[in-house]
Amino acid sequence: MVRAYSPGRVNLIGDHTDYNGGLAMPMAVDLGTVVDFTPGDDFRVVLRSVGEPEPADVDVHVPLDPEYLGALRPRWARLVAGVVGVVRPRAGGRGTVETTLPVGAGLSSSAAFEVALALALGFHAEPTVMARACQRAEQAATGVASGMMDQLTVCAASEGCALLVDFADLTVQPVPMPMEAEVLVVHSGQARALTQSGYAARRAECEAAAHRLGPLGRLDPEAILGLPDPVLRRRARHVVTECDRVRWFAAALAESDLAEAGRLMTASHTSLARDFEVSTPALDGVVAHLVGLPGVHGARLTGAGFGGCVVALTDPGAVDVGALGYTAWRVRPSGPATVMG
Image (cartoon, rainbow, N blue to C red; front, side, top):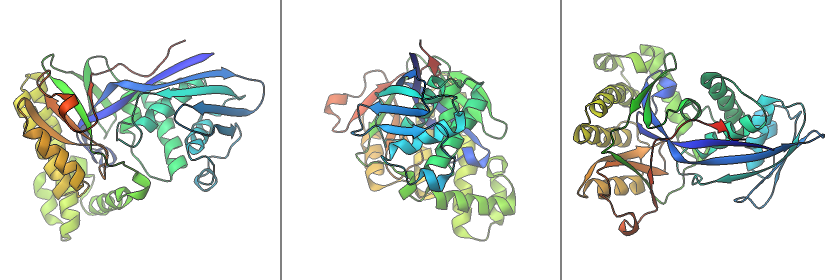
């Protein structure tokens, strides 16, 4: 039996910058997914999950075709099929899936599952190659042109560190998290589903702006003034200013300046809400509640938006999770996905 584990991921700052060739600072977290897999002699991969009433049963020769995968039942079999279609194991087997990650919260439960399953099926590669393979699997399974921040983070994670990722060349720089910093993830109560959100529209708007100006992650702020369309100008402004905030955030962490780091996180949320329009009243309400609490330096939505979670930077023990009124997790920076045995 092979046991593979992958952590989840929370993005501290820098959302919707990955597919624009910009900067982000995600962090792998100490919540994750375990896949136990026993190879067999037939050609079917059969997985059972505690959280799913029906098993996923996939032929190892499944076509990596979004239309075909989109018709598979149960729904979670589509992701299994995407990974199987990319990895192409020579034989099937049986396995189980367990996770401590909330689904639909923006903590990369899908990426954690993809990477853990790929490892369990025997696919081993350096982080960028593994991340690209699992990104391809997710895109085929969901039909969403998602970025690869989630997969790259869980593959390249460094214990005790966040990652400064430059998506122009996929370079990754570990940034130690200050010992006096605590990261809190709070669920808004609103599930996130990119296939039913405006994610594709936002990506298309960014592509339209980049067609006129060049890659948004490398622009100077003055360049966006040349966009005549006010919607495209707002989308581009978010990406440009968000990349600056990521740079300043990394510098603030290096100086253990939690007040400045928190200020940048809250400014990021404002930009995501106003310029990129991916926040919701539920997310805004959680952010407003958190930043009003003593010891909370800043908060922002994390992930693509349209629901899911908020991430906050706090002093240790500053927030009483039990009295918060929301489901919440204190998370620590984790190491990368791995085969455990």
